[in-house]
Length: 411
Image (cartoon, rainbow, N blue to C red; front, side, top):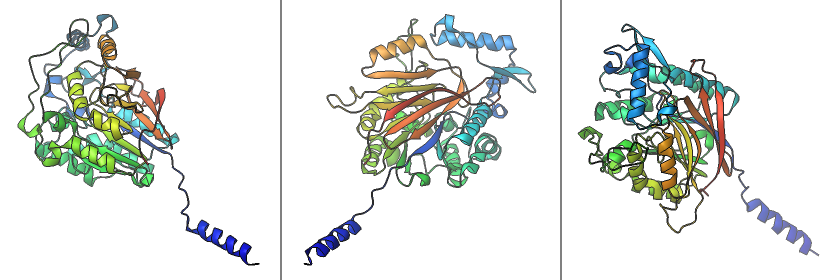
């Protein structure tokens, strides 16, 4: 009988026509924010008049009280003496964090990275002659990361300090980052899939400074106990800091469409301003940002990464306010903005924020540190590890906390 051979042949033919199942990979990257504080490019106000160490600490204490932080928790940040003024200024963690993350990546996988804005302090590029600034702030600390692999890239966004000079300056920085490896920037707003992830990871880059300046943002104000109070004042951005193009004016709509059209397994959104943070000095910007994009993120993103506050923090937002009545996995909201300057937490404000925000959980909060973050994207779980480095400028990496989150979207 020919039935058995025929059946076997049909089965073999069916197996040959079935495409092999692709096993999802695991990918790792670093997240660096607000790194560009270089003592060679200080604000004149930092050195004129020069401060003694005692003056510096007194000024830090005054700012602590002004920002309504609990006085018993006061801690002055590290300082250094600069020439020729011989004045004390806040020390820079730029090279310390770069060295720490480079050492970390020598033993851990680091296939790409993201730079979360405020890449240049105190004011961004001028668009005229920025070669020394670009060399000092980009090439010197992070150009060597190109040696990690031929495809290693640092995908960048801009922050408010990067916009301080002019639109021409912001465009000049973006053009330089696009043209010089290992950096990458395809305009102010873009999407990109790192080559080593083979399409399984896609990054969606927002310019949150332009986004916020397309509306009205109230100035921050806190009561003596650290609770929020309304202000009669609103932020007044320069004309060049406002959205101009159709894409700049419609970032939330672009993000929604881009996320929905993505076939990536992991959808990572980055911007400069955080959704949630604990320093208490920029919370109105976060409030406005949540109103603009949190529903979109809750619907289709796997996580949101930002800097702006010079802290290291991890939150999860249950999306109860953004998507009322809809059951979704909590959205990880990460702050990694401590790669250049230090900023304290405001523990009084933190308590009010967590009590007020429905469905918000804080997993990690560090202020007055230098550091960054390392993330690993496994097939179904993302793990973030916060890395700090000591104030002694040794550049040694110290892991200070790891947290895992379930994948929320993708195929």
